[in-house]
Image 1 (cartoon, rainbow, N blue to C red):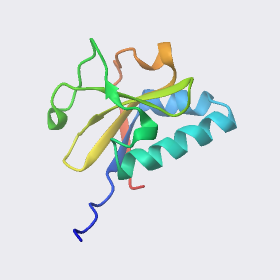
Image 2 (cartoon, rainbow, N blue to C red):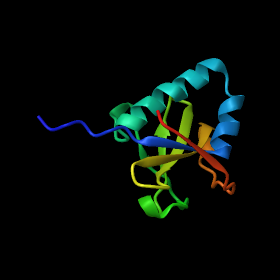
Image 3 (cartoon, helix red, strand yellow):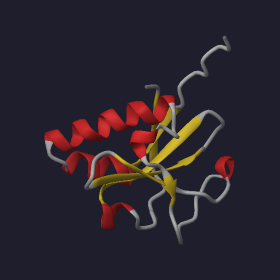
Length: 113
């Protein structure tokens, strides 16, 4: 049996952290659970991950693609691969219409899950 791939390291954009801090406790728990799934398997069926339209990534690692994933029926978060190999940059989180907007902030933080 092949060895399991190590989890992705999560890189948090400032916008993501600001919007996350405004969520209710139960909404944060849903995001946290989804991020756990994302770090181990970005294509997990529960996340319903798909490419965002009309949004370009800012890190060369993952190309220009930005992805949208579901934390719940109403909550989404956006991410892209990068800024380094083995990392996922979390761009935004919140309700559907909010998290699909392009991020203009450049500040970010990284942590190991």
